[in-house]
Length: 103
Image (cartoon, rainbow, N blue to C red; front, side, top):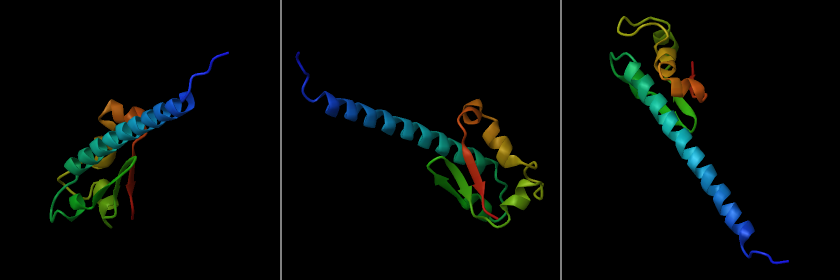
């Protein structure tokens, strides 16, 4: 019976590489989602657009009036512009991108 030295270490390295690749793909999708919602965010003073931050699995805004904007308060953007921006890309819909608006 022969054994291959280092196979467990090699397998561990392969698993780690796959995990890193999956995380980088998710980060890229999150960045794309944030880019889409930033582009869709109406601008008056720029505070709402500047409030977006990137999370590992999506985007977040701590703008206190983002929810009001998203429900159609601004005439510069349609209501639910956040959902429209994210759902306009089939890749985003299929991968569970998260967008958080903190009110």
